[in-house]
Amino acid sequence: MPRYSYRYFLLFALFLSLNALPQTLGASETAQDTDQIYARQIQLLGRQAALGHRLVRNICFVQSGIDTAQNRRELETTRDEIAATLQGLVNGDESRGIPAISNGNIRTQMGSVEMVWKGLDKKITAFLSDEGLSDKDVLKLGFKAGSLEKLLRNVTQSLELKTSVDSSPEQLERNRVIATASSQNRLLQQAGQSACFIHLAAADQAGPHIENLTGHIAAFDRNSFDLTFVQPTRAVIAVSEELELANLTAWQDWNGIEPLLSSVAETRDEDEMRRRLIELSLGIAYLDRELDDTLAIFMAL
Image (cartoon, rainbow, N blue to C red; front, side):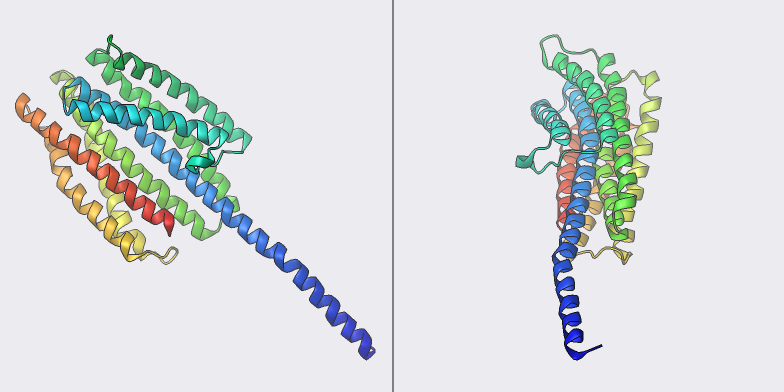
């Protein structure tokens, strides 16, 4: 090849490589943005499942006359948050950092979520009205929160299936941790809900609620151990000292509240039961915020 032709060839090759560089960077940035969107949506879906059970726990505590003012306030703010977040997941809400779900099939699933939510919301309206709800109706709300949780889990699984194709192994592991951490809030609220149901139900009808409480405690224990001691040893995701400390603190606080939850199933004295439920109302609210803060640290990594 003549010398001048070789020079032109090198210049042309250099031009092509430089021209492709912004596209490569753009593709990388787009993939990163997509990963962040999926992670945020998975976090929000998990949170809504937890909030659905928190609503029912709040209602049960108010119905039982336990820490009434605080639980009523939390009930109203939680209700508003669920309504706004579900709308955000469908339509998007930049002001709250909520990206809309764009996949058509998953949006159809969200339609089912909204229908179940409207049914639960009507019960909340009735509870907050002068009419109120009977103890039996309050106990039935656990099934409605469970239905909402199941549908939200279906949406999450659809998103996870999509990320299994689009995301890196590191991001898949991050999403798994986010889903597990979000489920801790749900399990905590379900445990508190079951403890209150044991108190509200007739003695001969408390058996299923005792069984549920035992299951929620066991699941929280497993997840807590995994997040605190197992997940940090995996090389896939870097873990900061701040996150390790936050996980350890949450684990220690859970070990403080768990015996109180377990003891509810064995308590027969009414005054003692109410005392323990008052402690649980405060402890669950505190640990719930602590779990939120811990997940926020992880999301920022």
